[in-house]
Amino acid sequence: MASAPTRGRMSVVGAAIAPDGAKAADVRRPALREIVQAGSFGKVVCVMSATDADRNRRKSFAEKDVNVLRLSEEGEVLAETDLSGLASWPPRSKVRWTCRKGLKPEAPNQDSFSIMVSEGDYAIYGVYDGHGPCGHDISDYAHEFLMATFVAHPRREEAVEQALLESFEATQKKIREEKSLDPSTSGTTCTVAYHDYKKDQLWIAHIGDSRAVFGTRNKNSDAFDKASIRELTIDHKPNLPLEKKRIEESDPPGRVVFDGYYNHRVFSQKGMYPGLNMSRAFGDIVAHDEAGLVARPDVVMIDVAKEREKFKDLTLLLCSDGVWEFIDPQEALKHFEFPDNDGVEKLAQKSFQSWMNDSEGEISDDITVICVKL
Image (cartoon, rainbow, N blue to C red; front, side):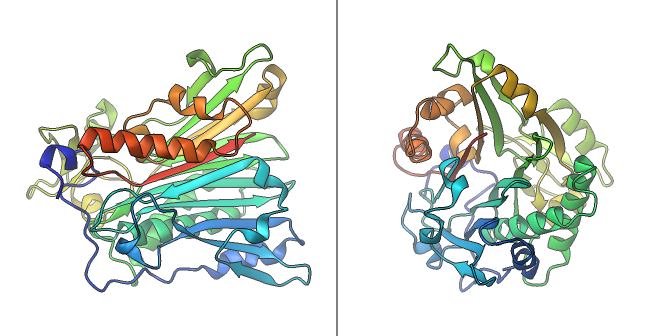
């Protein structure tokens, strides 16, 4: 078991040990199939992670299992567990991803991701970082329910921010009510990017500390410099003044305490629990009820059309904190300065090695990277 200072980097106090005999919730949502079914051949494709079949036995730095939903030429929804059917999918050249298990022998990969592209209409990308004993189930459930809920929202096209806020709210409510889940002390971050192709606008909504970064390059530059990089999210940490104030003024009020190592954590007034190092997340019912946690996202918009007038290259990067713990945005974007289909793999490898160096080979968080060339 890793030392206390090393474990202190993790989201919750103590190791996230999955309950013996627990099974990943069967949450393949029929709503997603309906969305794919409503599209035409090849138009709507959904790629999403799935809790690894071998759970905690999956080797460290191994790729997470995936599910693909797409429509056949005969109009049948195909549910596949590999990417072979996407070889000729046009967006594949613009979107790259990887989801790697960290060095945590006692737990499965708790990160999740989702990608849905409706060619000519929209694209949605999401990164989710689960935590707690059942964090893998929460992240797995959240990425499907949120994506389906948002796409089906009646005001998604004309009132994106409202649709995002209401979809996040509905997701938290559903997680609380879902009998197949145990979200009492388990939860997940969520960072979602919605690209409206018709308006050429990019919307980002997030809770927690999975960051989104936007890099631009002008016609005379081959590098992403600091001035060209925008961090689209702010880590929702309990010690941020506004977050701390909200926690301490919530009903009932929570507490923010420094853990003596790396993080400020939220605790109930009743005791030293739950000890979460973020102030917003899905799930985590105890923290929501007793320690001031919320699942309301911050939402920002980028007018991509205007950015295209000024820059030749627009790059969106979504990553879990398995990347951001040791790598800053400029260093991360260096992996995508030149045409290289291995950029996401190289960034993941760099992140994993950084964890190994810091912990003397004892522990690494899970690592998820989505890179989109806009």
